[in-house]
Length: 71
Image 1 (cartoon, rainbow, N blue to C red):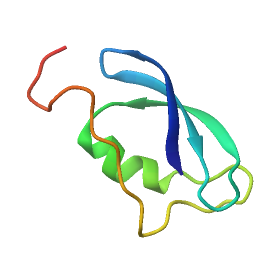
Image 2: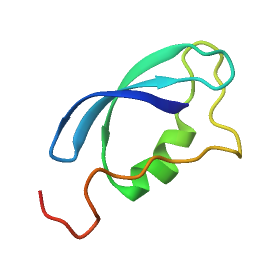
Image 3: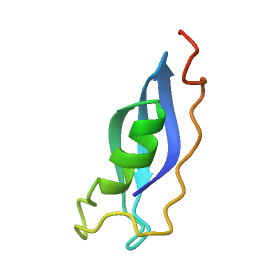
Image 4: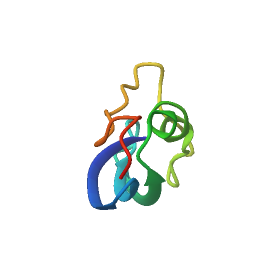
């Protein structure tokens, strides 16, 4: 899964629409905008339609705020 669009964000909490790289279906998820979530959690989210997760070519988005910035 990859982030197609972030629909809302309050501080580091966000809601986004994820899109499957395999079947192009979408699903909404709530997440946390930090490096760990983008690099480790999002690629492991399984698609509700086909059951697959991101491949080895997954490229995470960068965070809105830097890691040391307090929001």
